[in-house]
Structures are given as C-alpha cells and as structure tokens.
Image 1 (cartoon, rainbow, N blue to C red):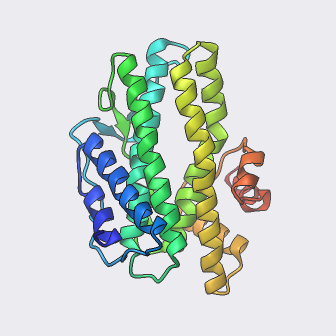
Image 2 (tube, helix red, strand yellow):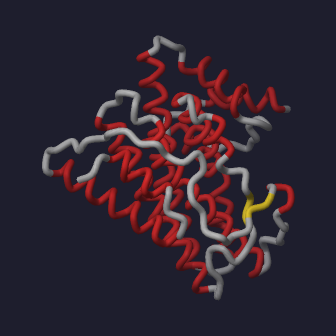
Length: 270
C-alpha cells in the first residue's frame, strides 16, 4: 500500500463527507490487510493541510452563535444527531491528522494500528448518524455547526503530547460523560436507530480515549516525564475553559484516566 502518511493527507484533503469517510475506511482496510499478512507498511512523511477540507455545508459558526433547540422536540433531537455527526466527522480528520502531522516522530507500529482503527470507527459512526438523519428527512449539512472543534488541532500542531492530552484525553473523554444521557433521551422517545448508533459510538469511544492515554504515557516514559503533572500542564496550556463535571468515572477509568488526572483541573475551573 501507499505510505500511510500519504493516505492520511488524502483523507484530510477530501472535502465531501461521504467520500472522506469512504477513503478513510478503504485506507484502514488496506492497512489492516497488510498487518494481517505480517507486514508493517511504510509510514512515510506528509505535508497535511493546517485545516482539513470541508464541504460547503454545514455553515460553521462560533459555538455561541449556533441556534439552541429543545432536545425534547423532534427538531431538537434531529439537531442533536446532526451535532454528533459533525463531531464524528471532525474526529475522522483528527485521527488521520495525528498520523500525518507527527509522522516524523518515530513510533511503534502499534501507534498506527490504534489511530487507523480509531479513524475507521469514527468513519463508521458518521455513517450510522447519516443514516439516522436520512430517516428523519435530514442530512449532514442541513443545519449550522460550530467551528471550534479544529482549534485544538491547530493549537497542538507542533506538540504530539499536547495533541494526545487535549483531543482523546479531554475532548473525547467528554463524550463518555454526556453520551449516556443522550441515549436515555432517544430511548424515551422510542428512536431505536439513534439508540443503536449512540450505543455503538459510546462503546467504541472508550478505546479511543484509551489510545490517547496509552500513547501519552508511552511518550512520558520516553521523555522521563511525570504523566499526571505533564497532563495538567498541557491541558492548562492548550485547553480553554477548564473541565466540567459530572464525570463518567467508570468509563474514564476503563480508558486509563484516573480521577486525579481530571478532578484538579475541574476544581481550578471553578
């Protein structure tokens, strides 16, 4: 197969959401086919765009300008699914970007296994949510979305440890906190397709947070740095607004995030 960093850059440079996720899944399948054959394909080097290509829609707004809709209404639940689809599409790019942007840093093959797996699953998640939107007469791009998600990637473009601390260990960990309530909301309204999609996302996001924690600790070991102190310093540097409870302590622990990593940052925010 082509060098993995080239594949990552191709995904990042593809604007159409359906084509982006199709390419993502195809490159992941090629990578894992090679790995199953006992090969480690070349990673290579790439020059990824600072910002990934995006479709003309949705319109991207400042988070404070995105219209608020009541989640109890059918329109509000559609808007919630659209917002999660936007998060998942951003996650596809975030996981390929960590491969392309930091390809110059020597890492074990398992690092690439994990992030290709995560990118593949995020692509699947986007497809599940797109199906849910289509069943409601909508589609990705039909509603505005917020433009703030890529800011963490830009801020950490030169710092792999900062990227791992902020994206999987803060932003994706937040998904573990809020998804159970979303599942409960759709279950109350007997929307079984949305429940099934969100349950799949919830189960698989635990491993994505765990990948971040695993490789963050690996790099701390490489640099003889204390993981907890380093995590706190990097989150203070790159993440604005502080961490907000309540926390899903069980799933965070399952993903390798103990309370003394996140609670001190939440208390500082207060």
